[in-house]
Length: 631
Image (cartoon, rainbow, N blue to C red):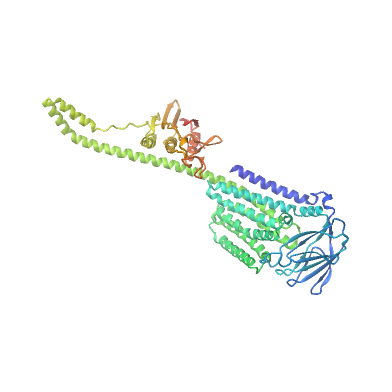
């Protein structure tokens, strides 16, 4: 997990630095030989349907137009051999005439889906006839807006035109690819973590935020049209990705911060979801295009980001919610860059649309990556501590059960002793009768009958009553299942600095694993009779010895011979199927019990070692009874 967080953080930092460097070098990125042959037609004569006319510099926006109003442009130039014409249409049908002859047309009726009111943005590269001297462009204004945007016109050979477009869109294209990679990486990481950490699903929203922004960038990037020649698909990707952006952010904040005051986020999410569904429904019905709601969604997205920021600030101020202030700082970065992006969309002081927002998003992701990594680290540590405490509580419960059984046996023994004392007079009288009568055969038979009714008192497994009780619990289960036992425990009642609970955790875990391994070996079968496992004796050999200030425990047991290892640690096989590892869809993991034993060994400057030989498993524990290391 730490490795993944470090890798993700490093990638985001590298991407941010690479994007900033590429932004400063974008004009000199490609050799002049590739881009120097491109010529631009900067001026055009225009005539509009309402009678307006004049000269304009491209790009130019014609405003206050009726739907499907015609706007004509004329440009004079002289073509060269091998020249092509490169143009971009922006939601407007277009016809281009070269010296009076129709060269091409885009956006005509039937060339785009019926659910679109206006044709999507398209890029066109068309070879020019030789000795072309005049171009005439006939635009029809969009139906969803009262303005028409006439884009610049470029002329040159195909390679130079492709190179110019790549240079113009390089930053946006690279940003989008990086965000796509981050999104996929985070989503895959989330599914990997969710197998052992359900709360990791919160990070899934962070990945969806990256993917949503990546969809917007890829759909918005003009150069993508050369790679994915489906304008309608890119149109839907751009607007759906942009309009969906606040949803994963709000969900991420809600699931990670878990604010006490949730209603502002819920209201914001409901409003945004309603607007998104309405826009998609109108688009599907052909009533209104997604592009018609761009301004409204710009402010709605900003409002959603600001609502998240306000909620986190309130959480930090009123309820001192952990991480709220850190999340607020990250969201503030996103809000500021979103404001800059909206201003840039209106004022165009930076030509690359989306650059400011994507830069803010990368900074936002970088900060959230640090926060999420720390949160996951703390959560995993808390989960491990919880598992350890649950394990100790389980052994304490077994100790209490063993004490109850011992108490019940003592009470039964006391009852039997009272009854025996009550019967002793009668038995002595009978014995005296046999003695006085000289019936020695009858006396011996009567004494044998009394001896048969006296039950032997079980001896403790070791001096330490707690360890003896826990060990007896598991050894009884093993004995009942026909496991051969050899137990010689030398555990003193006073084990120095090692407390009884830690000893019980060690003994209980080792015996529990040994008993379960023997039972799995008994249940293991194969689907092929020819591959039947040979019958081997099932046994547990548990020995311990105290010498000087060291306590050594060694347990050997038979098992089915199947094991897996990760690094220096053996993986728990409890969750696999009896027919083989992994066949139940369960993956062997580090065992909680063994982890607890390892922690206790470290606590007492001890040692835990495992050895495997054929079908025999051996675990050795060494504890220092005089040195206690607090961690």
